[in-house]
Length: 295
Image (tube, rainbow, N blue to C red; front, side):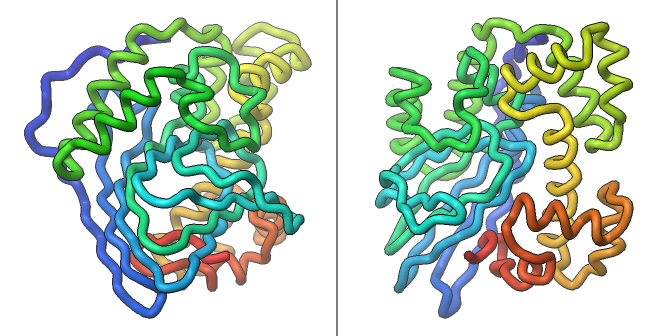
């Protein structure tokens, strides 16, 4: 694995600010890219500041990303799909891979920063295989130890979004530079699947890495928390979500074909499996101005 190389401190990020205010509530979202050497590991930083008169429950969908949530406000309530059971409340949390949706409820005012890691990135950050983190949200200090306490405090105290993002760059570069490498075959497979947006046959990758198919799938799942096939499906599904965020009125068949699905019925099956709803409900549930998906 190639370790991140330290870039010179940046003085300008191009942070994008989106604001919304309506009967749904008020929110501000600040979105920025990480420093370039972190890009294989971190997709983006998203800062948020929001308030609601009544609790707002969002449907968080599985993609090829795994977040670290640094929350400055009240704890979130996370619900297990298909049950009425509420998990223990978590203020900040970190997750592994998810292959199903979660319901996340917030009430009142909240704010913080979400770091969207690739699955490769969360594996490097944690420093060990992450199969045991699949479909779980955990307190950061239980996974990252003292590093989490220090990072949360530094991000909280930083004066503004850009300063918080700079703080994340510095801390993550230092930790990931010192990380132990992954097996080269697993990293190669992840890169090939992501570069092809989930379209490359898994058999092709098996031939490239030189392992038996069974051993390759088991080792990949052990290291990154999902099988290569599920990661490919998540990448295709993620392309659909991005298209609908850009334009909720987009034609679903066109979106499906562009993302690599055979037809809309193929997409329908993945939406039901990953989101627990129909494609129509997925479109109707989009909150305005980047607010997520209402549950």
